[in-house]
Length: 264
Image 1: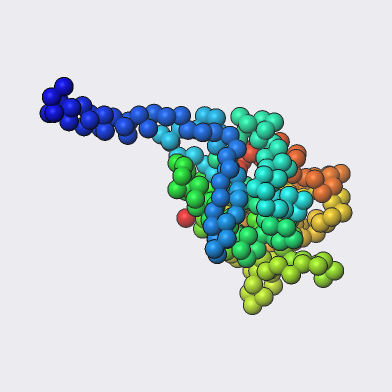
Image 2: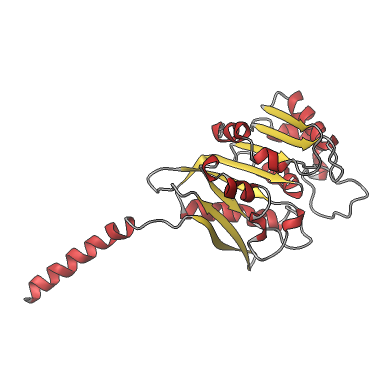
C-alpha cells in the first residue's frame, strides 16, 4: 500500500470510531458510581433501565433511604424501599434512579444532602435525562430528607413523595441535624407550605406507625392544602412504619409520579 493510500485508510478508520462507539450497548442495571464533595469521595448507585437508549430523555428518581441503610459501602441503600421494588417489577419503573447513601450516624442534611444533589447532577451529565421529570422520594429519615432537599431546591423537582417522614424532630430525639426549615423562617409547617406550594406532592404514612407517628405528615398535608398546593395524603390503615413497600408496589402511585412535570 502506498503512503497516500495508507493515510486515507487511517483517516477513514478515525472517522468511523465515533460511530462505532455510539453503537456500543450501554451498561444497564445497578451501577457503581462515586462523587466527590468537600474533598471526600462518596459511593452511590445509579439504576439504568434495560430499555435505556440515549436517543431519548429519561425521567429520574432521586431516592433517599432510611436509617437502617446508612453506611459507606455504596450498596445497602438499594436493598430496601425503591431498590427492592425495582428488582421485583422493573417494568413498573421506566426511569433512571439515583441511590445516594448517608454515612453512619448522619441524616439527609448538610453534606449528605449536597452529596445527593451532586450524584443527581453527575447522572444528568452521564446519561440522557429529562430535567422536567426529576422526582424526589424517600422513607423515614429519607422522608425527612425529601422535605429538606425540596425546601432548598424548590424549582428542581417535578414531584415529591415523602414516606413516613417528619419535618420537626421531637424534643426527646437525639437529632442534631440541620432543620428542614431554617429557624428564622417562622412556623415550620407554614414556611414549608409557602416554599413548596407549586410542587405536586403525595404524602404517605402508616396509620399505626410507632416509630414516626403520622401527626407530622398530617400537619404538613394540612399546611400545604391551606395554601392551595397540589397535595395528596394517604394514611395507610393498619400499617406500621413500613408504608414504603405498598407505596412503591402500587402502580397507581407510580403512574401518578411519572405523570408529573416540572411547573417552572
